[in-house]
Length: 136
Image (cartoon, rainbow, N blue to C red; front, side):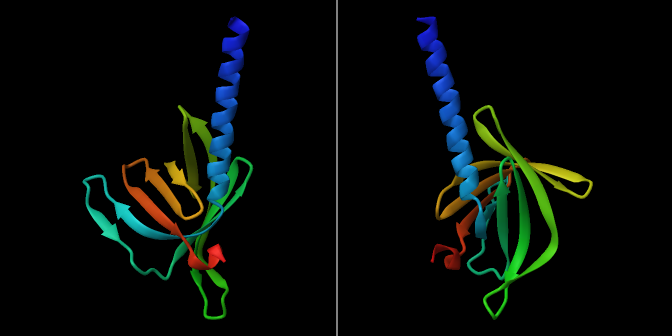
């Protein structure tokens, strides 16, 4: 009986880890902020933005770049790339960003082929939609 419980526990932990990895890997690409909800419930929509975030993931590390599309179909980076690491904490995926001397965390609430939801440690929720050209 103990072996069965141990086996089920190991499978559950491995399964959660695999789901977290898949969700984080789904972040890779270009994302437009669609809505920001502040901790007080105030919501701000972004029906059109000339800027987007580009996430690159490699293992448990990543980089977030702020970019703008150019007329020739390319992209221009603005600002410095922000490196981050991710880990599973209490069943949730936590991203730790390090920007210069500053450090903050965001929890990955949802990520699939069309939607990305990040919850900042201050309670601000960012809802992204995938950049249209990234779907093609």
